[in-house]
Length: 488
Image (spheres, one colour):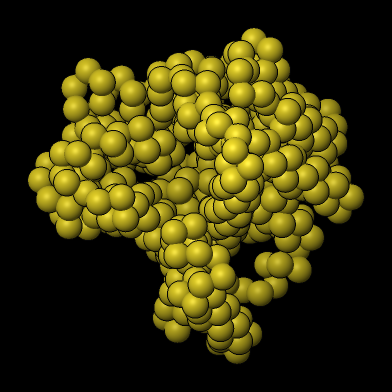
């Protein structure tokens, strides 16, 4: 087997062949991440088929999604830190292996319990891959221009992969059956694993101590999992119910215990000094609000098109295509050029404001809307905004951090995105449901009541995006993210 490529030789005046291999390595990393990103929306499309085939009830069906979300959210932080301690490539390979084998188990599942258990293992593998992928990109690309391009490609995969999942899910479920939405991961996982061994850097700059902070790991993982469980079950149990408030309360207590532990142990899982780094702290706050706005866009606009306008899943995927193409154009060159010219603060501010404007357009959607007049304008603005803002958010979150802490920083920002998106979507979905119910009570027909609910949710989503823009525009240091982490 050929020796793994050493990223350090690629910096500066690296030979052209080595530089090409870095970009091949990036493609492999992004293919692995794309598998994870696709999994959420591809499963959503297939849920009705899974329900009828395995005889799920409405309540138990939610666990096909919830089991994945629980382990995915719970292990992002720990997965990133373990990658820092024991090797980013090693944990990327472990995550790909777990995710692929769990996908096989999901595809072969013939019972509810087996499918749910396999989905939980999928979530753990997905968290590990997601937490260390950004770190590997930072390891591979140290030059500011190349790093900006690489992060742009990664950002596009994260932001645009979901709507590809809608298309692929509709295609596979419609032409074959739901088992294939999982089995399609097998050849992809095998290829990613084989190429990763060849292309990804084996050299690893380890953290100062390899002692794992077990108490910190247990408390923070339990806290995030309980919070995730409370969020995903909040709409069903009720946001003011004893169950939801109790779970959130325990999660907060565990989080406080985690912070106390981290302030006292010799080798903390998460050095609290990380949040004294301004760009890192600001980027995570921006990420929470931005993810809430992004989830509002993707999920609620898909629901509006399906439930109000009567679109099929495949038509929804096609409606997202223009915004995906715009994000691709930014990711594959435009974003890096803008960042090298203006830094990260201005593109982030402008991009998030454009996204807010797109959500405001969605906040006026009528019950008899059309693609060209009511869907496409908002999609174009949101694609433009996401393409411009996503890369700067990621770069700011990973800036000012040395290689020995890059997995942790990646785990933190991914956790911020996931928790912000989940909590934001849960709140906006509840808001939409409440408005729909009150509108129905006034005697309005069902589709019009749904549209009224979505309009309120889109409006609040626009406020989230605007708030993220203001925080980022006011507080980020504009150029620190371009290459600072490579200087450590």
